[in-house]
Image (cartoon, rainbow over all chains, first blue to last red; front, side):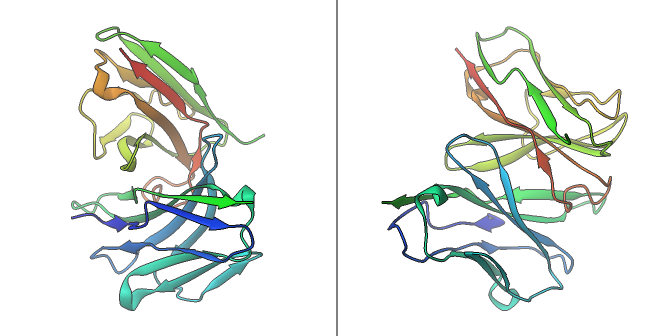
Length: 118
Length: 116
């Protein structure tokens, strides 16, 4: 079963629109970590946010905000007033224990391609 | 500057010709990892290492080898590359061993490999 689901493969918006990228995860751990990474057309991975499972406070950083809801196993990402430079692939990722419990693993979703049109 | 470097950045090779992709970090991190990125699949972990001489398989280890003889280096070895290993590869590091995959990972710039 997929552990991190990003159901939106591609999203296209016009500049200044708000856009929400969905992320649904699955884990049996009580302690886990969630991440968002951005991959611009240049290809590098840019870290955006890390949250642990005990911190359900929503977070805002400039035009970016994140909504973490344990009840629905979701960690959604909203960009307010989108800009062309926001065009990128966005990955959600989950870190939880491997089955043996001896280490943590990082599992990525399949990514959402966001295109912001001028 | 704190960074993870990978070489080469681009490589085109032929089936069966052994190759090594190097990865080096200058942050004294304990945890290092290799991922491959394929369209529609996101990033998948190949191997990881929690410390020198300690390596473990990730989700897709078949066809790959790694070694961790020094803390700073974590090369990825393809002994007999095949076309299905054509992919974008990322090396990453993070500070702590056990929690390595829970830390914020520092990613290298990526290596685009094509196997003909």
